[in-house]
Length: 627
Image 1 (cartoon, rainbow, N blue to C red):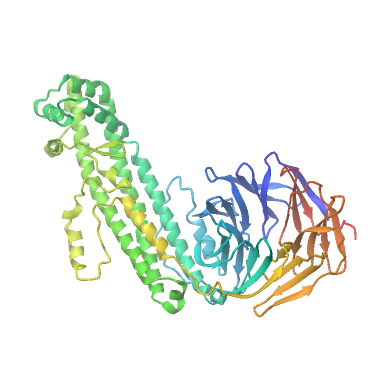
Image 2 (spheres, helix red, strand yellow):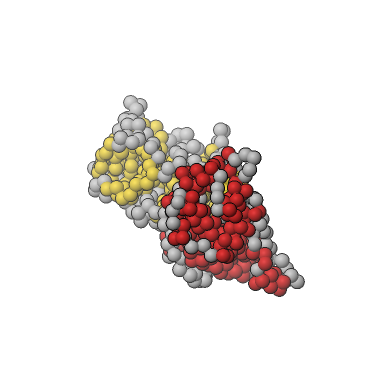
């Protein structure tokens, strides 16, 4: 054994995890950064990421094929692609990732799902919505992420690290693993008085692996499309948020300063007589100003056009793709023998289709609202610009205002209801698009209920089961929230009979469980290594006291035949020992060693010392130790 790399780090290292398939080491730091480095004969940083606002990193776990890294923050679990560190998926949870196992038992390719239309790229999208889909479609085996809650009293199973498929209650969870055939779940629990290994019969998981994969594939597509919808929302609100805000503030402040008259009366007087009060003239000429009104007219029309494009080309296209996958899922839910036993319910899928239809109608309603608001706001701003130029003794004939546009202005001003107030913010009522981006009900009723096409659709459906419901007072944001909640219920799977233990045995707190959950080694009170072979039928206990270990054993790492020990001598010297069939190889470790991480292929070890500021890479295959 030789030390290949010896590096110091100004940023203390807190967690490390070896890739199960490559010489890659994932590291997390006290600063909140995490990185993946290549350690073969040198030290090469592959990529580094720092997520702002996620808090401290609780742990790192690789997927069994080494293509995805799970990073456990305090209240979220993020999945990153090994290729460039792209964020693939984020789950809000306080659970901790314990293991990520592969069940290589699929006998067929996943179900062929519908081809969806091309979705135009949206700028500033944090998640690469295509990467996780491509990653899943390239796999034919099922990966199951094992998570435990913050009290370590319940184990949760998540297919592909995303979709909840079942849970197992167990107090004091320390280590877990699933055998590659999916038939056994091994759980090691630590209590104050004892450490125990319990094996659960998970035949239902093994039997439904292909079906779980099918539902997970649909789930991944629905998930990425839902992410795309959120990105479209963000793009729409970003293009609108600041357009009228300054104009609203100035107009509302002037409105509040008027007494006893109000702004509506002042504008009507200007419209009818062509003259303005001193206050209104000063406000238009010196506060709003001709150039600002002209600029506002152009920017609002451009923003309307941008939102219309996002709705028609991005939002609706995504909704159609989502509807396609939900209809496919509806058919699956009706095949009870294959998918019903997973917990997939037809009523829940139908509810999601219903909520999606409501969202699409709401988007069409918003398009009509934009058409009306665009005409009214354009007319009003043109008239305001023309009046301001006249009050400034300029040439107002350059601004063309048709009779229809003038009628729109008159109709609006005669209502006298110029402002709506919500959350301490006042909005100029000539534009009602802002309501659809609010998390509260719409204040100004939409005008689309005279839509003859929609009336015809609702008439045709009146004698049928009311899958399609229209809620006039909901905003677009509220409608999307209802859809998101419905989709979560739609994919609430729960495999049965996972929590029935088949066998258990008491062990010591000094143990190691192999990555395939087939072997468990523990050190008994007399420094003897015991090995347990875990099978479907029983747990076979055998003695592995092939070598005399006189020093105190403080850590153990186990593999198929040989294993690795870390011992501590009476003089506190630390030694790492590889125990082969007929010999033992030793190498001394730094006196202040804090943590040791051994790769699954038993080729490399990472030694963290000096309060996390020093890391050494140990080649475990080099035979330079002492026998």
